[in-house]
Image 1: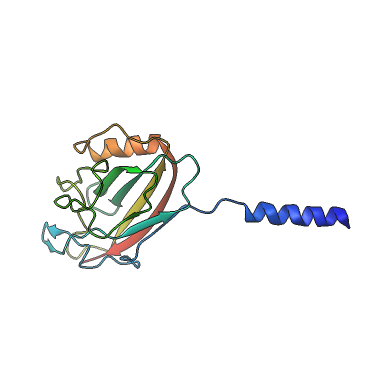
Image 2: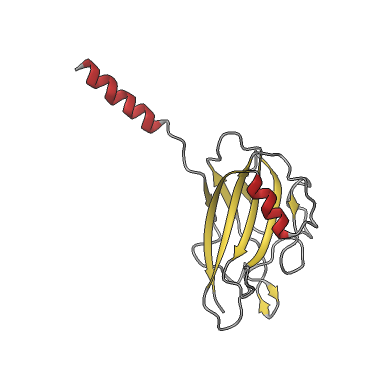
Length: 180
């Protein structure tokens, strides 16, 4: 009976000490992007306000975070990068709504908002072609094993993605859809 007790207690401890899943949430996105997040340009007339994002349970050894917003449905043959944010300190657990506006100083200066496929810095919201199918917008937070990527805001989004993937410990993705 004592052996069974030890096995049961050991199983319980291993289940309760198992690492939590790295997750990304948003109080602004509930499956659909809204007019608030939609780009203002390219024929769209949204407010272009980046969504609030928060994450938890980053893996041990995380030294920084990066965020990428990507539309795999864009009719470019390679998708569309809407936002790259990197060199986010490991102690950061949230970006507030509107943090993607580079004209405001809502983020600490060490955080870099790169160039998006719109050719602008910071957040560029959804703006799919009119009448196209709903587009999927994948917002991913990456836990990285380095404090800095060693890039500046002018780095090509593909190069940013390469450096992120080369230093990734884990990632968590939130998906929203938008159609016009």
